[in-house]
Image (cartoon, rainbow, N blue to C red; front, side):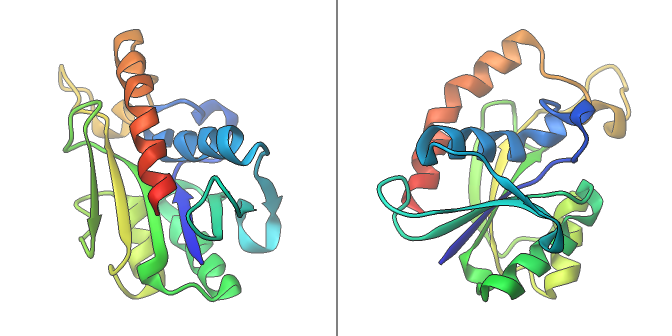
Length: 176
């Protein structure tokens, strides 16, 4: 079984911000291909859905932590323990400042590179041997602090770019 997790912050005010890009992509995938939505599971500190059949190469749990980004590892640890998922079968979708808007990379066994959500996951799991789908949000301009930049909404042009790569990300997710 695979575990695909989209990182973001739980409050409505953070929806569609740069920092919630991972959770946004996972939500859209589940709605489009699994024809359902995620369900809140308080004991797992996450919104989840198990997906089987044509939309997934094999049974897959999709999840979005209900913890804040910097505590994402709490949810990931609970999910991996409950579903008995090996870290090699975990895929984390998250925003990445080091990639331009529209670029993405799929990588395994990488450090956090300054991403506090990934740092939390590594701390809670005790390993960095999991898969990451890093989705570019670009770097801030005009000396905007990173903490403010990641909580901004995408511009219209940036949203168009994200929308154009979403089918490619869906294809990558379907192959997992």
